[in-house]
Image 1 (cartoon, rainbow, N blue to C red):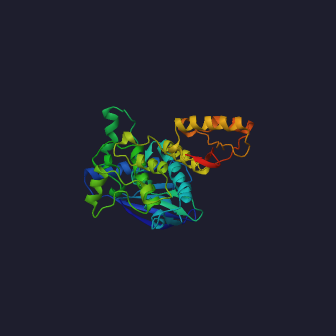
Image 2 (tube, rainbow, N blue to C red; image 1 turned 60 degrees about the vertical axis):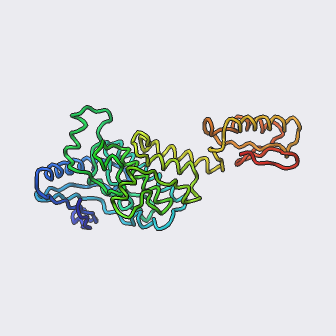
Image 3 (cartoon, rainbow, N blue to C red; image 1 turned 30 degrees about the horizontal axis):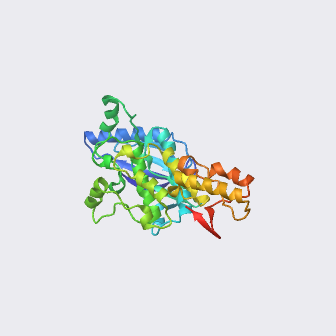
Length: 340
């Protein structure tokens, strides 16, 4: 949607990025130009250090110039040659989610989330670039007049086809869940160094986006557990109703998985039968009075399936049992057996 140039602001003595957007002529182009001008001005009001600022929009008659913050660093694309370590992924993905959340709170969707628009600064901070094609988010459940006004100002889809959500391809309603899909594609690439819908041509990629679920990231990278892989799969759901409904929900789901990783807890193996078995083992061990052969209870926190041992931690501390962080062990004759 335009070329980007490096320029220097002689008044404020700082480098800036200039995005040139030419008027190709015609009524549709004029409407699109007016919409870009309007939404670029709105995007300039988003105040978040992880979003490249828009300083000004200049109307030169036959073209628009969007004056943006110049960000020094490298795009995320440069880091996707091999799978990213999971800890590095956590840091960068959190920044991406929080930055998009700030824009969504202002009623803006980006529409072109991709590695080339995610800049990594020298301080390892993410900056989201190119809100120049951002669009005002229609309210969910809005009436026909409200929901079509914005769409009419944007003839045709905007964005990069390989990262666009299915609804963006077929002209459906666009909202924050469309950005979440695009970000899910980026997250998948960060962890696997592969595009989830890779194909020999754009047509094949589009067909897979519309009709196929990608392989779980955990199958391509053993460092990715099934819980994290499930978060990304939900971000990539074809039906927007099956995705997370906000960036805050993505962040909460990812943070829950990260918290479990820190204590070595495997939530997908926990269940009611495990809690009952653990309770019986603790009581039996305490009654035998074996201080170092008793079970170990882990305090993992969480709710429901994520907290099988928590009710028993304090009991284990009061009885001759041995509480530790990590997996839970129960006696099995003279051999301690790990309870999974």
